[in-house]
Image (cartoon, rainbow, N blue to C red):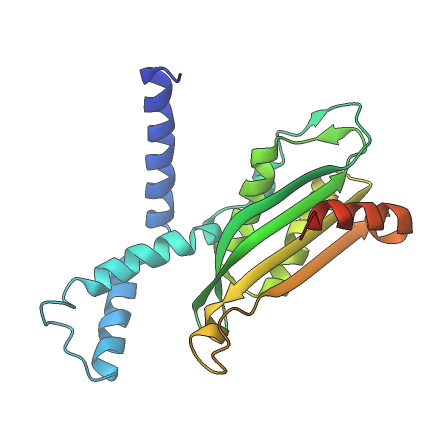
Length: 210
């Protein structure tokens, strides 16, 4: 069980992170923009149900775009030396992001694998890298490549494979309105790409029994 002191420390870190991403955003400017949008669609920004909406949206954007003020590479600094030369796989990492084309959310799961060459990293860091790139205006294809390229570079890995599966509300709630559709993207680097046996093994592990 965590001690009260450790719980307090974790809470202070969470509060500090929240303050940091709020301070990086111009919240009053977002609020003014939201009021303009509400007026432009024919609503009254001052009616009871909407009067606090601009402030709520501003805080929401500060949270959803928190990755803009962070460097995902900082999570790989804590890599440590380990004599392990088999695949490391972390599946089903939940993530959410915002499509930069319509500013509508897409969310799903990321599956990450790498073949270490003397350096490994804590598994929570892999999830933090995913979030660091996801929490900004994105497209899924770029997000997938950014995760793979960073892990390949910073871990000096022999190979990396990343698969993302996501549902895009810009497709399910508007436009063609095809609910239930899932977009799958992959990025494969190094030995995971060039060696057929390794590629087959990593893809089997990433997809599991799906």
